[in-house]
Amino acid sequence: MDPCVVHVDMDAFFASVEQRLVPALRGRPVAVGSGCVASASYEARASGVRAGMPLGEARRLCPSLVVRPGSYGIYRCFAERVWELCREVAPAVETHLDDAYLDLAGTERLYGDPRGPVEALRVRVRGTTGLTVTAGIGPNRMIARLAGKTAKPDGLALVHPEQVEAFLIDRPAADVPGVGPKTAARLAGFGIRTVRDLRALSRAELARLFGRAGEALYDRARGQDTRPVSAREIPKTISRETTFHRETTDPAEIRGMLHYLVERAMKAVRALGLAARVVALRIRYADFKVDEGRTRPAMPTDLEGPVFDAALALLGRLHARRVALRLVGVTLSGFSGSGAEQTSLLEPTEDRRARLADALDELRGRFGFSAVTAGRSIDLLGRLRQDANGYVLRTPCLTK
Amino acid sequence: MAVEEMSEAVSVRADFSGGVITPRAFRWNGRSYRVTAVNARWEDREGAHASYHLSVQAGGDTFFLSFSAGDMLWRLDRVILPG
Image (tube, rainbow over all chains, first blue to last red; front, side):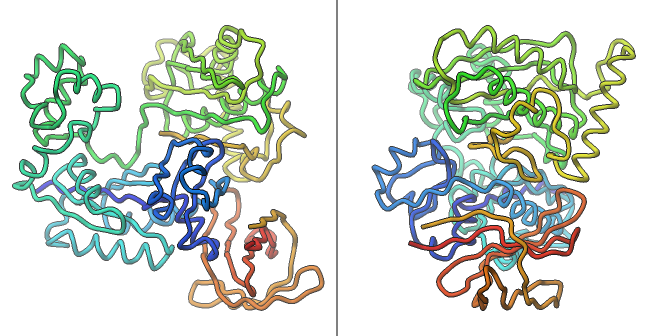
């Protein structure tokens, strides 16, 4: 059974959806975001606008830029439809915010050349949603993703196993998964800029420099990536963060928002059957200074209470300046299976809390997140608009 | 571009065929609008009932309509006036 992975990537996803929804935006430079660019249309990219760029800078680069604040509920619906179409093609589909991996291993007799069904998928996505996707096909997810990058936008590229060496060898080292900006800068300091350069380092040398991640780099520099396509994605972190509609010093509003973000994050944790070991908090002041910290609850947990207590303690430590806050965010990590590492039976109180959490999740799943407003999240009532899916945040940050 | 968000019940004349909803006209604030194009369709399945959403053109303006399978009502959710 030959491995065959497809990477399906939505082209300029949020901006493209906005252009589908409103014909007057088609062909115009569009950015989605509040504070910074979350997504830029290709017309905007032609002027140098990029995701992550502050909006002020984007507007200077592109004075005719149309900025939309974002309709994340609508984007979710479009993404879910695309993932449904992907599931009609592949036995296993791993979905992320705006891209997915499809595992076509075992479909050789059904499809033969994978380009046929993948191109048909692209056509169906366009016909059904009006959006374009780019697909890369390769023997593993790394090569599939890199193949897709060569064909963007609205393209299809295939790298056969025997082509991997030639395809990879002169690519930038920064293209290798696991090489982020800091690692790339560190490698560049050693004169390592390409995959060919990276191969000059032995496995032991990379492990000394980067630990276990270094060993993965050694394999990936040789085109090897054994990470499976997982139909149930287990993220490394689950984050929820937002900017306040107005900078605030109000302790009730800050605590209320923190509690709400913890609720949203923990719902996602429970939905994946996980428990979190590490809680991190990030705050940004009105003068853009950022403070971050992390801590561990007493044991891995899938309940709001211990996580909120931990986050609140962090907030007390970090928010030490008499300056208003612009942003608050919570990140959970260090996941285990929610039942896997319990070393003691739940105390009766904890058992009641767990049952309450399950009941709330079920209610919210049926009637929308806003069906129940609990705990300190109540402090946001009257301050923030709500729809069925919860408070309408200024900049909802989703799981990476 | 002027964007107005709302959630107003409106009356809509629509075709339901081939598994697809196609609005033909709607009435809002005492005025009738003829739908000249459907820009996009999407379905929202969060919550107890599905809701079906459309972006449509009526003249030069864009309207977001939705039909809830829960209460069987049409709503006007957004009006966009290009400007």
